[in-house]
Amino acid sequence: MSRKRVQVVFTQDQWSMIENLRGEFGEGDAEIVRNIVLAWLAEKSFVSTIAKDRMLNNNHRER
Image (cartoon, rainbow, N blue to C red):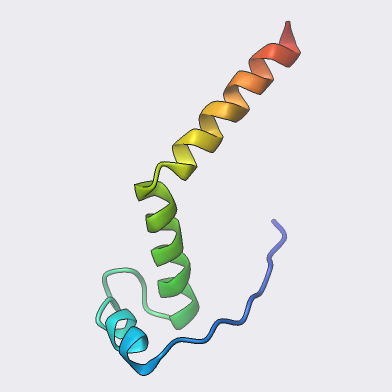
């Protein structure tokens, strides 16, 4: 699995909110931020939409 690193900047207030999720969303800073992003994508249905599109595209290729 390849990985991509990104640098992000948070305000002190934003970081305080993120810190409050320590233990719930992970232990390390990167793990917490990654899990927040993935949870947001899932909540907005991006994850299921992409999965459905891929399934449809794979079905069309197999025919």
